[in-house]
Length: 287
Ligand SMILES: [Zn+2]
Image 1: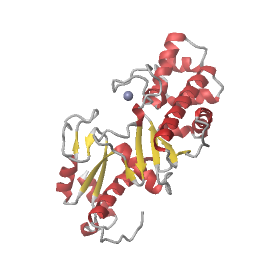
Image 2: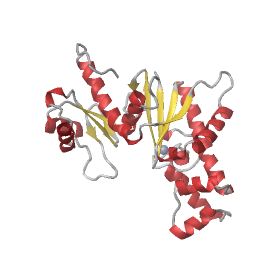
Image 3: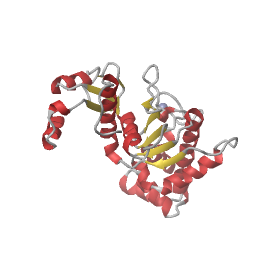
Image 4: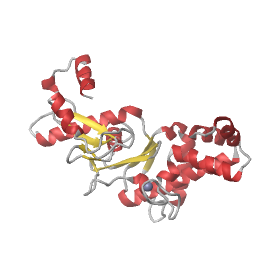
């Protein structure tokens, strides 16, 4: 990581005196207060690793550590689909459902640093078992991986008349993309599970509105490549299930920074920290 930072500085002719800090966005769980990674399920040997301080020592710059989903949300808030919002919530629909909440320009972490985990809000009591130990988490209904996984389970158990059956027989698995394509081709089973995903995503969005009432909910991640095919049915279910005691005020939209959101947001966190510590400093660029 430090080597990567040095290369960036060199390639852009930035002197180290010009660097206010380095922002790290990392998978967790982690503690931003201590700057330590608690564990990385996919990277062995990272248990209790002091990532923030090691990077800071290596580079001799101050460093900040933020959860990757929060960093991506903050990036969209600063420079992407959340620009101009005061309050914004992002849901990243990928392998799981990552999320970040920005309230009044600040990322919400919670007292125990476990806040903002919207992928684990329960949208169906007693529903599908989640790896976190709860049942019926949004992640089990609205992530790309779970759409494909539960699609496969149902095909095996019920043998529906669906092109996805052929997909599964040929390749041994199906992907979210296959479900999307079959849905577009008018496949009834694909339509059922696709709309089920949109419906649960809409429940999640309504719960977010009732809790935070944000300007905007930004959807990101692989599933959003489906664009309006994801957004329109979600919006329809959202408007239908939304309470009627006030109009729908929160917008739901798709992220626009792609993979750049994380680095931009992580840098934004370092930037913000610098200004909090140096209120006298007048930046050349306003964010
Ligand atoms: Zn869960």
